[in-house]
Every structure is written in C-alpha cells, then in structure tokens.
Length: 255
Image 1 (spheres, rainbow, N blue to C red):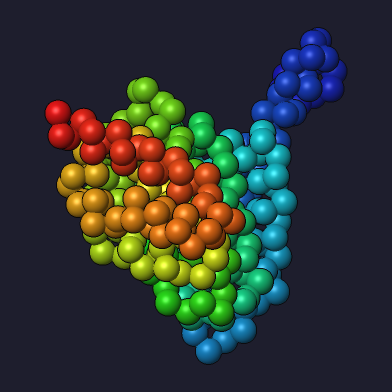
Image 2 (image 1 turned 45 degrees about the vertical axis):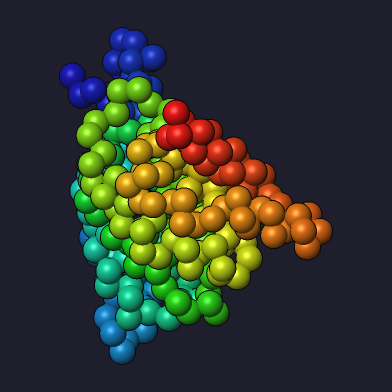
C-alpha cells in the first residue's frame, strides 16, 4: 500500500508520512536552489537567483525546515556563493540574502555543534574576508561577520562535548595577532563587537591571552583613558567584561 494513501489504516501514520516526505522534498529542493544560484562579474544577477535566495531565507525562518535544510553540502555551496559574490556590489540584495542565511546558521547552536567541521572549513574564510575589509561604506557585512563569529564561539563555549576546533583556534590566533587592534579603533559599533569577541575568546581558550600577546592591547589603559576623559558612555559591558577577565588572567600569571 502506498505510504501516502489516505486510506492507510492509521491517520496519524498517514500525516506523519506526509510530513516526512515534505521535509525530504524541502531539503532536496533547497539544495537544488542554492546549486543553481550564479553570480558572474559584469552581469546583473538573474531574477531566478534572487528568488532562489529569497525562498531559502523564508524557509530558514522555520526551525523545523532549518534543521533539515542546513547540512555540510549546503554550507559548502553557501561558501562558494560568498566567494563568487565578490564581484557584486556590497549593497546588492543578493549579498544581504547570503548574510541572512549565514545568520540563520549561527543562531542555531545545535547546527553549529553538529556541523562545526564544515563551518570551520568553509565559513571561517568568509569571516576573514569581511572582517578585514577596509571599505567603511557598507559596515553591515563586517558587523554581521563579527556577530556570527561571536555566535560560533559562544556555541562552542557552552558545549562540553564538541569536536576538535583546532582550525577555529588557528583562525582566532591569526585574527587576534594581526587585525584585531584595528577593530578597536574602527567606527562604532565595531569596537564593541570586537571587545565582546575578545571576551568570548578568553572564555573559549584562556591560553590565547599569552599566545596572542593580548596584554599589548592595553585594555586597562583604554579603560583608564575613558574614565579620565569622563567618557562614561563609551565604557560598555563588553569592555568591562574583557577587562575583568584580563585582570584575573594577569593575577594568575603573576602567581
């Protein structure tokens, strides 16, 4: 008997089978959609590509669909699209859709833990590209990259059984020793997000304080400067959180 035959003896089983095949169809359909999206330098993005990304974004608003749609193959194709999207203007609607999809992934701790290897392999280079980008006309992408990176770090911090995260450690060490200081002097609200990221990094791996020579950032000096200038509105919670962690680590290292 056909599993989708409404005459099946158990109506509950019939509905269950319908839902199962719906999810399977959505998973396959979204993978086909993202595979067919194309960006070409010098050419306008086709309406079909824009509609495909918009459809995927809409489906990802459902928790049930999100868990079914996002897998290692989806992440790999998303990474490829980010790479080819470099030919698009930063203000393009397609790039906005891509970052919305990226945010959907980062907002789901279960997905981050389950797919940490393909995320480290395929998405970390995306963060690297946009965090280092100097063009301040479109800050949304740099902000989103920092926010998503913070979400990934936070998810890993709160899981006691996550797999090896050597790649994200390497990425963070490189970022903290090369580009991080520039983030602290970037336009608002980049510095606040950068401080939050550093605070999360130290919770995630306190050894980075020494390995990345984070003392050179002189966070305590920054705090003292703001106090002396009575710039209390710039003394944010991320700054206080990072300062507290650094003071504790300094004390531990002296003992």
